[in-house]
Image: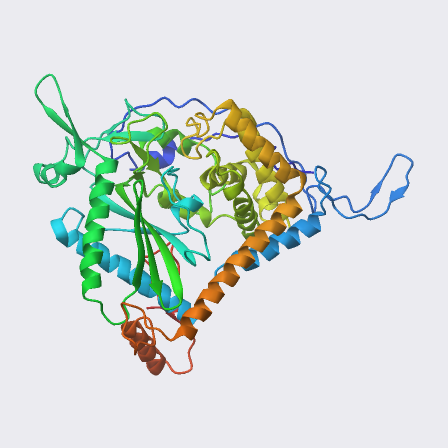
Length: 536
């Protein structure tokens, strides 16, 4: 029998061998002491076929107990029913892309990338050769750890059909010989200021108007890269470009339905054909390598060991424009490991991902006011559970219900103790700021979910169905109205004529072969066309 919230003792091992083979920190970061993590109690001896199932057993009088359904002790819900409800939710929540939708997604992405190229040409602030990280899901879904109070409320089905987050480096620090100092003296854990003092004069002059200035006693001037000023510049630049683009609409160009600045995030909703896509565009600072403050995390055992390489996990990190609860918004950035999280996701089982998505759908609105638990907290809880529990347990296909109940239990534990350690920097408690009243209020709400998980799953399913019906109804009205979009030629049939011609050429040149559009928003470096097993 295995308890989701329990686990095996934490083991430590030295990675000095790998470190001595040439891997070194390429950035001089502020030194911060990381306390040694305590061992986790619990052990696992035998899993059997289920962590709680007892299909038949023998009591002290040697009498056979007949088969009975596996039940959740707390709620009395049948595990089999919970599994079916999670499967049904996944069916309605997942995004199915037909050929038309794939073309529309591709068209919107190309438009966003072209727009950013035009932003770079305005004043040459953005790097000429840039690397964007495109993530499936919006900032509101906890794709990036930002936790902004200024985010507008958008609803799937009403405002958009699918959402993405795009991290756009304003500065790239990828030169391995370039020392960079993150000033953490004035910040909470997981946050930092960024001084441009060590940059060349050209970089300082280019970004001087997006910096706060601090004059020292010795007369030297220090420029600190400001997340709020960078976001203001980014929004203004995007607005200028989009205004110019809309003055001269081209055939097949997406409709720009909304452009809003939500704190330090620029939210853009595009209409392409019958699809509406939300892009949360976030200006970031991009680094290669790994920060010193998270170095101790590398010395521990993790669930991804042996599945992906350490080089894939520590290939880079970001500073995102998000302030701590007591920090200075105009100076403070938050460390983000979104690139690493994309790699770790490859190691998670389908059943665990389904449980996570279902749990997220339940809590995202229930615990939104007052703000306390975000989907990113839930993701951290899930990653910690992967380190705590055996892979043989987490890989079980029919354990989604156990995982869902376990995630809820873990979240309750976090609220009651006001403790949720960041996965990459465990000494950073992401719930430290919570008041006792807020923690108790949300714990009570979550306790009601734990008492009747089946009912909350049914509600989540109905919401997913309603969003799907609303999207289909809007698409039907759009196609039935016969009215052209304000930025499209009335004769347009496909959303992107060039893309349609390219597909037609591929079909002509590859008779009898399977051709599809490859959509993977977590990895924009891969080709988008696949013919049989080859990508182009």
